[in-house]
Length: 342
Image (tube, rainbow, N blue to C red; front, side):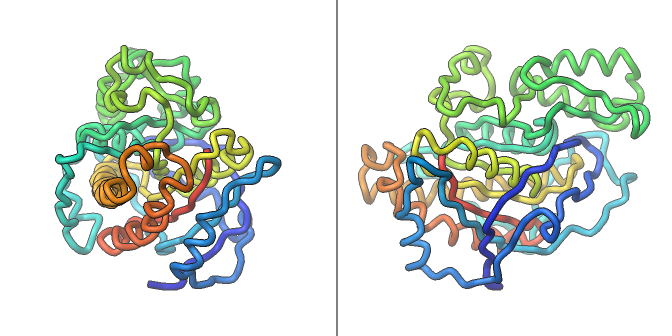
């Protein structure tokens, strides 16, 4: 594996689309992110780095490992699917992902959060797959507004986060042009989404640690277990969303003083690749959960479940290795990892 890179700073950009259409890479590392020379990070370096807690008066320390910098090749928009594609994930990996046995003896499950630009396509596919695998999960978008394709590229359908339900968007687009929005897959996508939760939520508006009892009452998928509103793992689906999440966490100042792993999986923004990405996300979740169960049994459930930096240090140290092994199974989905703080 090539030597990982250590990023010194992170910047966010305004998000635009999370739709069945291909999104262009608006953020270039050479222009937006200052990078240090590539260095090798050894186990002892990770251990000493993980032991550092954020200072009360300043932003939390961050570092990241880019596991695969191979960019996707351009895809013809004509290949977008109008229905949710089913896949076993083989199209996204050079080797079939191993079936990781769930630890039914303990019943412990890590809590996840999936993030894309508009909380519509990729994050919702990941949300659905994780919920179906019985993981507690929430999902968000990082854009300023929810943007979906309209009749032309210059006429998108725009909605507000936290105020617009998936059902109302579905009904509006169905009334506008049912043939168009059925053909481009929007109605199928929105039909799926409204069966998962009420509506798109914005990451920057989320109060971390606020009780999510309302979502449980609404029977949102994945809401059981997420009542406390604090996930263990955040998975973003695009580099600019990862930048926005990490930047936002730095500015929040870590009020909970609780570590959280932020992992980006670069997933192309169309239905087929979102489905493949959903399989990859569940594979990563299973791998991480297996290690979490092992470390929880080693240090004791009460200590591990406290969620602090010291109580989960052994798990935190193993996460980069888990992600690296996952990357070997999914070489076409470049991943980036960092440890941040809530």
